[in-house]
Length: 490
Image 1 (cartoon, rainbow, N blue to C red):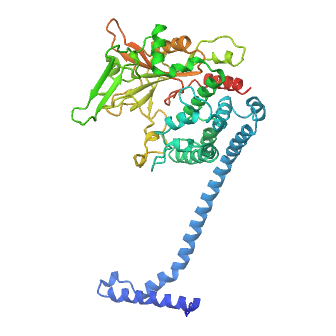
Image 2: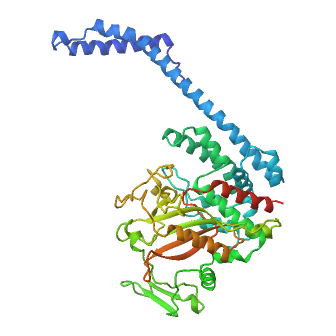
Image 3: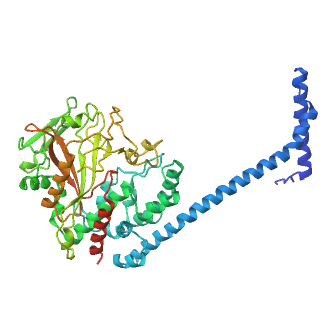
């Protein structure tokens, strides 16, 4: 049988505590009797300290309580400022999910910008779009699973790939309703605390309603390409295939990276492995295979001067926009030339095999002066697993002015041939794929054996393209998005 012992009353506890403190004080007094009389602490002095202690604790408690209240009030004020944007975000999502049209949203949510309306309309379309055919893979969901498997949400601890949220429509809806707002909240507060933003509330609102971060813009561009290809069934989207792209360039006299006709089949062996391992058999695409065989291209001297030794081929990304698809969608518009929207040079890192490991250097006015601006990095977005430990949650655009491997000043340096590269990409967009809204062209600056300046060569075109954190012609870009989604939404 269990015996229950009653706890001693509060008075008894208090007297016991006082007795313990008194004994400790007496012990200290006896231990210190051998010290210099000037340094001795008498029991009377110690008792006086004990008498004043409750009052001091009360004063410190009041200060701490006041500090906590101030912090809570500031947090509530910031949260209330963000709540308006969050409620609008959810309202727009449910408006589109319950059958609201793009044009109806223009009138109902007049406070949204063209960029914001296009972003939210296409984002709300993702659960439906996931099971629709995709121009380069079986479905939009399959494309998401493929291209988001190496991109993570920066946490500074552990990087989980975004492809997790593309596993089903339920995952996608949960990500839209909760993951994106949560990431926007944490990111905006973090950036405000680091001095990267003047207002956490303004950053939160922008991230939700009219994003300008590279990831959301990339996904927006992917949705635009997928929905336009689905609505128009244009054959131009087939040029995402690298071999078809090379053939189209050759047929239209567009300079493109050369392809080897021979050998018919290439065999590559590891120098040490045996037992049939380490052998790669590559059948040439020119002879019915799937492999494009090419010689490695080299950077021209002007580019090499800006790079470390043993650096990869460092290309320039030019994003161009066109409106040829609007006629296929039923709009009555005159044909307009494609325009450059963004230009970024990727300065490769030492020892890297490709310029995917790079500093992304903006060219804010490539056509006029060919001068490099400041650079940025997105390495923390690709740190999977524990590689993310210690990495920042966010970084400022344009925070790099010198090459991290050499210290060579990039900002203000000239990239010869940049203006001609922009012209080449606009011409290629008009000739090869006028019905594709956005195209990201990768241009190599190779040695020119027959004249001055670099020889410009196109490597490929990316139709679900990335701005690489460069300066964007926002008004032109937002207008292009708005016009296309307005026609698609009819």
